[in-house]
Length: 238
Image 1 (cartoon, rainbow, N blue to C red):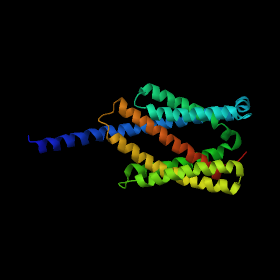
Image 2 (image 1 turned 90 degrees about the horizontal axis):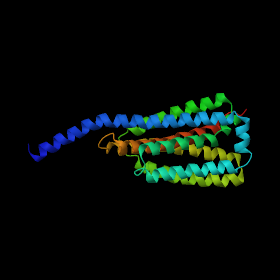
Image 3 (image 1 turned 90 degrees about the vertical axis):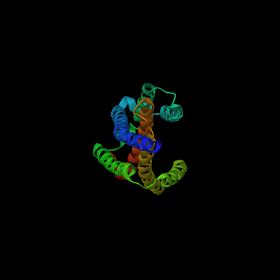
Image 4 (image 1 turned 45 degrees about the vertical axis):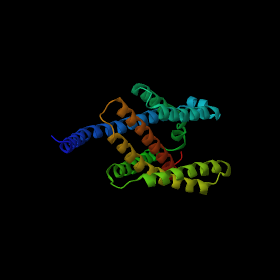
């Protein structure tokens, strides 16, 4: 067998292997994401329906500030050290992050009706699912769109901080609308980026699974933020 024949055989073997590995890794991405969403939802519901928990967390800003800083720390820590962490450690940090996020989102169940929360969740799920499908199947390179969405995200954060002082209802709706567009676009971009990273994995070993876990964290954040911005349009207050 000459070198060209060997290369073609190797390439075909690689494609056959990836046809088995990639779907399994992508299922892990969505499984971890769903697990984290379930944990966050259960914790948030428990907080929002408990008068004692609401008093403990929301009578002053300090507990939420501490939880928020801890969440940011976990995201940066896991992202920066994903190659050094074991899969068990990375998964544990993801679970801790999901719990902390549930604590900070408990107010949702105290402020909005269950019907409107459920409605918004299904709308978010449909939007997320559609964009995830586009990101997974499109042949178009979404890198440029991702860069634009990321710059828009920075502007969104700045506008949100400014509106904390302005307290403008109109600006809040504008920011929310922009937020929906940004995280809708980021969902498609993240799915395509995750798929491309996992396509480079030689097998479904621990290193590839850690990349899948990190991808699940990114999609989890996309889903949560999309849900929160949509809730401002579809949420009915008690």
